[in-house]
Length: 272
Image 1 (cartoon, one colour):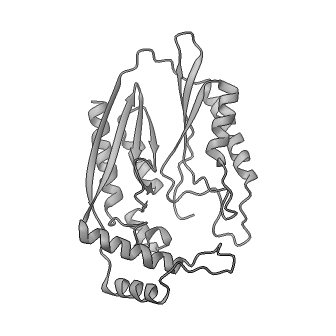
Image 2 (tube, rainbow, N blue to C red):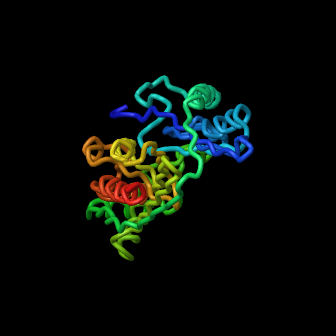
């Protein structure tokens, strides 16, 4: 609601020597949370999209979800908004319509060059203030066990969660003030696939795609372990739970820019 989205839909297909489709990569960027807050376990729009594409194109289908740390299918500023799980099917159907149009524009590239690069950044963790530490300790002394807001224990007290995860972050800092952050890049002909940890904000993905030396770039988030939210530096000034210091938002403000710079350097090596 505060910034850009990435509306692109990407399709890459792998075809056998007999001309039949073997598999395809699908790319789009959005939180898959149609099951929330109902606590439904569903395949959401990525699962529905993959199934629809398999039915129409054949072979296997894999959805690569982009940097959707701040991209959602609903309007959180609308007090009357309710999440309908059926919306996952509708979103997938619309993505499938676009996929079929994209298929007609595919370029055939036999004998693709294949290469990969990776790096591990040592990103500094955010520093907790004396007040934040004291407040978290006081809260957990009062409520040593997880606190719920209803008798059915379905609504957790998020203040309790943040108190616990802030002390978890403090313990991590005591062991090591830096955290490993892995970036992987893969070249499939004219296509670059970038794998990032955590939930980076979409602005980082847009910058990466615009500066990428590859004709086509798919960015995948949530790869190789959980690293929490990675907001833009500007987002910290506006606030929000994605920027609230905890083990779920543990990197300093410049982290997203450092990650994008490192990913671009890997891509330049692959497409030099």
